[in-house]
Amino acid sequence: MTSSPKESTGPDRVSGLSRRGLLLGGAAALLASGCSPGTTPVVGPPASSAPVGPTPLSSPVTVERVRSKARGKDVDLVLVAPEGTPATGLPVCLALHGRGASARTFLELRLPEALNQIVHSGTKPFAIAAVDGDNYWVDLGSGDDPQRMLTEEMPGWIAQRGLRPIAGALGISMGGFGALRYARDHRELSAVAVCSAALFLSWPDARSRKVFADQRQWEDNEPLLHTEGLVGSRTGVWCGTGDPFVAADRKLIKAVQPAGGKISTGAHTDDYWREVLPDALRFVGERLA
Image 1 (cartoon, rainbow, N blue to C red):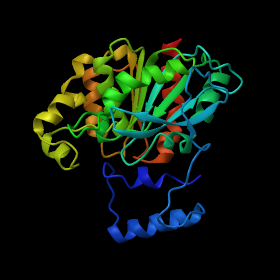
Image 2 (image 1 turned 90 degrees about the vertical axis):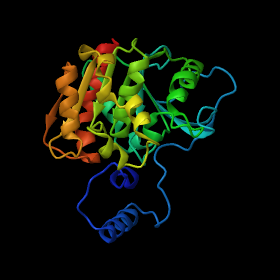
Image 3 (image 1 turned 90 degrees about the horizontal axis):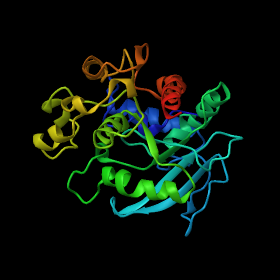
Image 4 (image 1 turned 45 degrees about the vertical axis):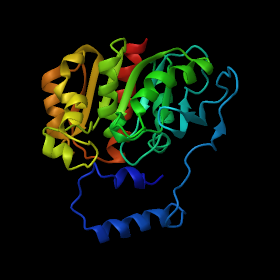
């Protein structure tokens, strides 16, 4: 599987390559994956329509197309359960993707395989729920509110499929920002794990991403400015030494004193996230148990 073109070229990534080099590299990656330029490879099973009534999960990986009123659009809901384990009654961990990616990105990152690996090694089973998001997973006042979707709509979607309430959150890059933001409003979470969290040390840094409308909006949502809402014993932080967000993640670690995670060799890449996902999932699973 090639690295996700969306994730690797998203605006929250730092690269010394020229625009021409990026375009050529992206085209080469598409050709290598068997896709023509201008198309996006579909990862995982085809999306099915949302069930009209309670429908327990019958497959380890399902992708459903659901309507989010909070976002004003249809989104993919990806549900992952360990193979060989009945999904009904499993606790749930949210999985929030990075900028320019989607819920299906977790399938490209081999999250189902990582979940199977840790469960087979002794971690108690749990399920993962990923959904399409944007805007650093916060309300930017545009009628597209991913955070409200997570709070008001995800619980119903999950309950309808026979799963227990959300008890943990996992985020990568922009999703790390979103997971930490979600944790502020959901103190009941047993675990929050973030990988390469896209956090900002200053307003000029945040402004350069062209996401937040103004400084006040960023300050209201920036996890580094609200660390008092995070519990160190329930938090894990992973980041690579070559990651553009490593300084911000080090600041998070200093403020929160997380119980898990580490700064290790790596960059803001799919390869790094595939490497640390098993550790991050194990951290979550131990606390959900």
